[in-house]
Amino acid sequence: MPSRARPVVLGVGFLGLALVPVLAAVLNEPFYLDLFRRIMIFAIAAVSLDLILGFGGMVSFGHAAYLGVGAYAVAVPAFYGIESGLVQWPLAMLASAAAAFVIGAVSLRTSGMSFIMITLAFAQMFYYLGISINAWGGDDGMRLAHRSRLPALDLGNATVFYYLVLAILIVLLWLGHRLVHARFGTVLRAARSNEPRMRAIGFSTLRYKLVAFVLAGAVCGLAGALLTNQTDYLTPSYMHWTRSGEIMVMVILGGMGTLFGPVLGAAAYLLLEDTLSAWTVHWQIVLGPLLVLVVLYARRGLYGLLAGARDG
Amino acid sequence: MTALLVVEQCLNGLQLGVMLFLMAAGLTLVFGIMNLVNLAHGSLYMVGAYLATAVYNWSGSFVLGVVFALPATLAIGMLVEVIALRRLYERDHLDQVLATFGLILFFNEAVAIVWGRTALFTRVPAALAGHVRVLPGVGYPTYRAVIILVGLGVALLLYLLVSRTRLGMLIRAGASNRTMVAALGVNIRLLYTLVFGFGAALAALGGLMAGPIYNVQPGMGEEILIQVLVVIVIGGIGSIRGALVGALVVGMVDTLGRAFLKPLLSTALGPVAAQSAGPALASMLIYLLMAAVLFFRPQGLFPAARS
Image 1: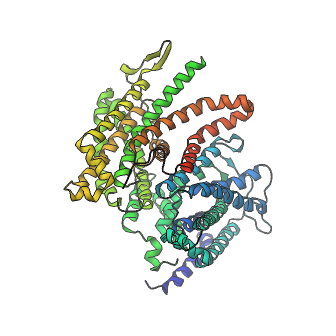
Image 2: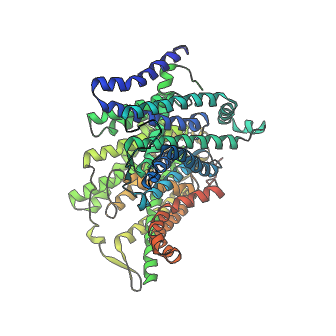
Image 3: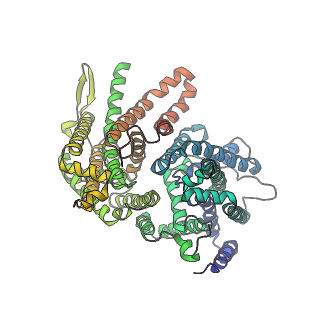
């Protein structure tokens, strides 16, 4: 498909997302509002992972850690009575950026298999930390008494919350588009394809990679903050390593190294999960082999199939 | 009394260590030779545990369970290699991680369909039920002692196999230069399939011995897999010697940390702080260790010599 088709695909996609609340209201199926909001929240997390995985070539297997840090940054202040989203959400981004800085500073010293494993190990550390802090719910997690309070926006209203998430996703994609086409993104992609050469011509690639790592962590922290609001619940299982795997699957399924691919991937993964789990409780027995097939035969992902060219 | 507890916990650490080694040996061989990150290795451990436990519970004979589970898991491992993993050797690690993640989902769900999601219980075989005296006045469960002996025995056999036999020579040659080995007329694909099946059997051995002392349930493979990944990263990816040292270190650190960190912290920080900090730190300990090792020696303690 020629790249002229891409604006059409994107336009239809976003129009479809914007119409979901209307359709849900007409069909009287509020469940779909919930499902698509969840999809967009995971899309935000997947886009953030793709910044480092697809554009930066850093195979981070611990991205769920930031989802968890963001979730704790909402639920813990709420537990102590601070319910303002203007405090919680920046805190979520700052805290996960800080976590990503520490993890990145250590992990980026390694590469290849070691990098995969060390990011996984850090995420496990956060997971075990989460389940052992009994004051904050420990293994069971804790209920969020009230969603984040924002001026003029009531997140308790499902539609308002939905459009806020959609707006965040669109802003993120726009910023992401600016970023990957700016000098920063060019250096990042160049470092992915040939790091020694980039260093030889005088770029401190480690600094660029670390900045990308921290940015991705911060955005994923925001997704975590949204996720706790979505489920009204905090649980350390947001940081479980299979969650990191799932976010990674979304990126690959949609098409890595593209901005819109991860959005498609998140939608495909969660819709598949929803459809298959309605059909059988053993839906993972279908999903698992499907995943193997995608890896073996559909490397470019859904976005590659739909829109033809890479947009990165 | 405390000295007794220390001896017992050290033996428990050793027991966990050899268990981790059985897993790590196969995983590190597969990585060292085929350059494959196999997250589904834990699933083979789980399959081994399920097959052995099911046959043991059905027949009442632990030996029969072992005799059935080892070749069966070996065959399943070789089948998985031939159907799916063989195509991934030339791919990058990301693809391997994803495809084997898919296999984990498949295997976990498959055992849940056959045996249900609740844990399968089984007893320690009657012949190994008692205690043995390891030191004057110090008893230790016979079954766990047997695990330690089997694990150390396998480590020795593996060493002899890799360093003294023709097959071992081919394995080492395949690890250092696969193209040359293939050019010399060795059927490298068959060798890979054999090594993979062999690794699967080792994982199954770990799993079937774990059956009577841990829970046999879906997802049991991943709990140990993550620890095994820590082991091979600490030991140096691809190195069997590294896997042995890494496994013993991780087994000891984890067991002793869980047993003694809380009392130690309680004398230093007071019981209230230790109550929550102790378990948290104990479960993070091996990951901290791994991060520290990678920070100072990114190649691990005993990096495999590769050309």
